[in-house]
Length: 154
Image (cartoon, rainbow, N blue to C red; front, side, top):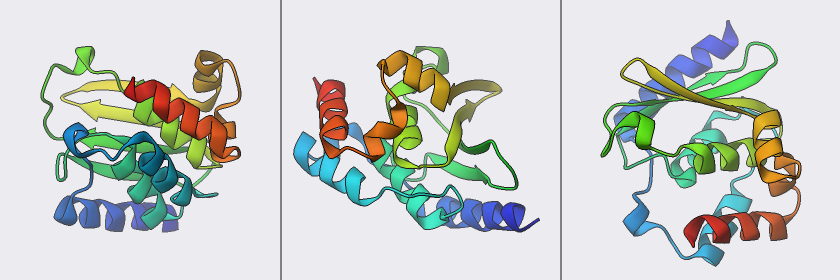
């Protein structure tokens, strides 16, 4: 029950304040990696830290989405509900921001993105397979995070 209350409170806070950084205002690679590194969290249940990471991960401009946390029991998850997109859902690549979240929230197992009845989901196991190394190492080794961020901005 406590997880649901936290998710509702978090949804209200995110809906009122909005979160996100448009790609045109993203800081350079080093600054972005520093900011992401500082925002790491061991727990999905740390709502303010997770919302900050969702904002920094690159899911869109402020107010374009809400965040729900699944914290009642493992596997723990985050759902990002998009309110509007600049391009069709199926042609939008959500893998990079989802990978960042999975890497920087230690106990996060799944990221789901939803809009207009469509969903995209990435698990920690799926991100690990795609990367070729443990996705959680993004939150354990700053050099891995810097390299990942650099690779996404090239």
